[in-house]
Amino acid sequence: QVQLVESGGGLVQAGGSLRLSCAASGRTFSSATMGWFRRAPGKEREFVAAINWSGGSTYYADSVKGRFTISRDNANGTVYLQMNSLKPEDTAVYYCAARRDPYGSMWTRSYDYNSWGQGTQVTVSS
Image 1 (cartoon, helix red, strand yellow):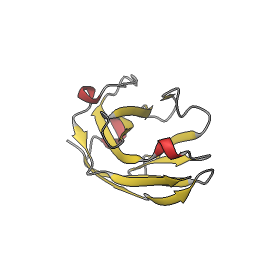
Image 2 (tube, helix red, strand yellow):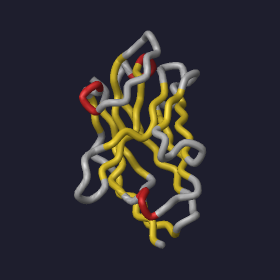
Image 3 (cartoon, helix red, strand yellow):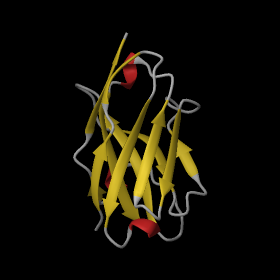
């Protein structure tokens, strides 16, 4: 399995930007599909974005499309989530997740992933 540690969360005003990082350790990172999920207070965890092992394919939830960008650096074992034009409804704990997949498939459901980070809080004020 892959060990994951998120960072980069914080408090930002609406319209602002944040970049989340997820540092991965473990030999399978470079062959893993990576995903970002979030859980807002009182809500279920939801899919945000995913990227395949090569970085050649990405997929986004409609709610963040055009505002968020997922990317990865396999040499440094890190996946990023650049978040622009943030809205108060983006407030949540953001989680990084991994699933080994050398075929490059996209996965959007929580139970598709078998490694999770501890989460990082993002708060967007209005």
